Each structure stands twice: as structure tokens, then as C-alpha cells.
Image 1: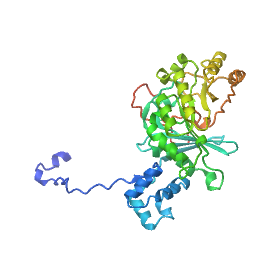
Image 2 (image 1 turned 45 degrees about the vertical axis):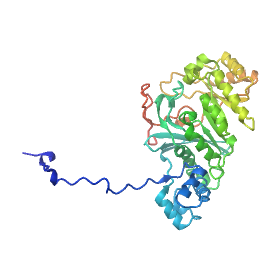
Image 3 (image 1 turned 90 degrees about the vertical axis):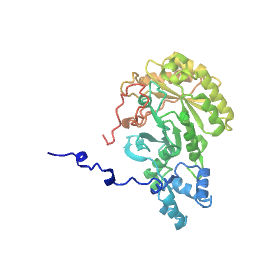
Image 4 (image 1 turned 135 degrees about the horizontal axis):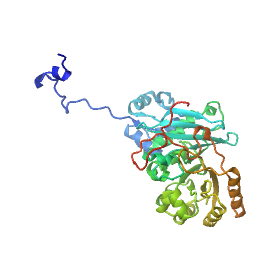
Length: 398
């Protein structure tokens, strides 16, 4: 008769290997500190904690962010002893690239694996013959706002990204840019926090990441070249104006509360007037008195008629702003359609007659699902708020 392993095992407890004494067990090696998302102050504190001078922080920041270096051995202006110490105690760990797509228009999309095995996406959009290179950065895995016209919102929300995972998208794009190695233009000239997620719902990590973007020893971007886009988390707009000075964009998409309640459910909590008042307060705190960018996605028969243009012009009066018109980018089961080119131009003309210049944004990277509203990285929908109908991204070129 065949016996199982359980039957063969002796029952005498004395024959079993003794359980290790917890007190005498070897301690686990300490987790190495990830330096990628650390601010200058955090890096200075780290170096002081390992009995090194705090000026080392600026040196290492330049290696990480200016040079894209993740190998301490290559940081040649550090002593050999310090490099060896850093190998033991620290690391530079960014997201892993699992897919890269290149569009016919030059747009590039990276699918990145972050700490828990989730995927996020970041998109590099060239313009002006490559002189302007804008990186669209994600702030969350999925999104909880459930905007009805956005594919990311249909996934539900998994978690916030860490500061290292946010700045890591810029780090990856800079490292993988061919022109940088060939002595061409700067890999990334502008950053827009317009990828997956609502940035102001991840305030604690987004703001430190943006400060690294502005930091001279980080990426050295000017505040005019870093833009945060929000659907309208009003209390955090007020806080943002106190903590950092960057450009602000508002995902408006409708000029009356009844329609915006349907398109952007957050509007039920912070209505249009409350949101635009927050924008005015934000501009009052800005030393440069810049404009707010108003993003308006045109959807056929929904918000693209003359009455909608008139409502938009009326609600924006007295707000220093510019308007970007974005033809809807279709995705399966959205229930919305893209207006014709002629209709989009008509809407643009109506706004022009009302005193607003409103360029129509050209879709970029839509052949690789990189256009605005098409970022659909694979997530685990823990919210169970609705059935997921966006299939998981494919990790191959097909």
C-alpha cells in the first residue's frame, strides 16, 4: 500500500527538528534605503545618520537625477569607502519598464511595474520639432473619482504612488531617451501631472515629487514647466498654493453643475463656482499671477453645442485662464463619441467670438493608447464599485 508523506512522518515530537529560538535567531538584514524619492533635506539626514557629511546629498542627487545613475560604484567623486558603504545601506530603485511603445507621431509610452507588481503608464510627447518634450506623469494606480468619460476611472482605485514611484517616471524617461545620449535636447522639458489618478488625492507624495522636479540638483525645471491637473479637490488646491508654486490646470469639461455632476462626480461635493473661486485664490498666491488652464473634453452631443460654449464663457469671466479643447478619445463601452472635426472647430469659433482663444489639442499617441484619457494600466480593483470592462494591458508589442 502506498503511504503519504504524512503517514510516513514520525509522530514522536522529539525526533522533529527543534524550533529555532526566536531570541537567538539571526536578525534580518536592514532594508536598504531607496534614495530615488528623497528630498535634499531627507538625503542630508540620511548621510548624517551614517556618519557622513551632509554635502554628500547634493553630490548623490546630481548623480541620480542629472546622470540617471543607479550604480554607486560609478559615482566617481565619492570615496571608495563611501561607495562601498552606500552599496550596503542604500539603493536607487526606480520602476521597472515592462513595455515601451513608440507612436508614428514620436510619442513614447512606457508601462512601468511599481513596488507591488501593479502597472502605471507614463507618456513622453514631443512638440516644436523636439524642442518641447512633455512627460505625462501618473500619481496613482487607478483612480477613485470615476469620471464617466475617462478610461482610467473605470478601473477603480488601488493605491497611491510613492514619491519615488512618481519621480521614478521622470527618471526612467530621462534614462531611456536616445537624444540625451546623442547630445541632443533635454530629455524632458515639461511635466504635466495628468496621467493615471487624481494628484491632489495623493498630496503627501505628489508635492515632494514636484519639488524634486524643480530642485536644481534634481531636474531643474522651472515652475512654469510643471503643471498639476486636478478635477477639483478644493481644500487641497488651497493647500497647494501655500506649499508650492506650479502651474494649475482644471479638468472642467462642463460649465453647468447638472452636466458636470454626471461627467465628474466630484462636482457634487465641490461645485463649479466653489472650484473656480479656489482657482482665483490660488492665482492670488502666485507671485507671477499666471493663468489657470481649463481642460474641456468635447463629447458629441453632450457638451459641444453653442449653448455650452456660451455657458463656458460666462462661468469663466474674470478668471485669468486659457482653454484647451480636447476631442474625446474613445475607449470600449464608454458611451461617448468624438465630435466631428467641423463641430470641434465650430465650438472653437463660438468661444473665439466670446473673447476666448481655445486651441484644439491634437491627439497624440492614440495609436499606442497613449492619448489623454486612454491610460489604462493594469490594476486590482479593490473598490468593487463596478465591473471592470477594460482588459488588462498586453505586455508584448501586440
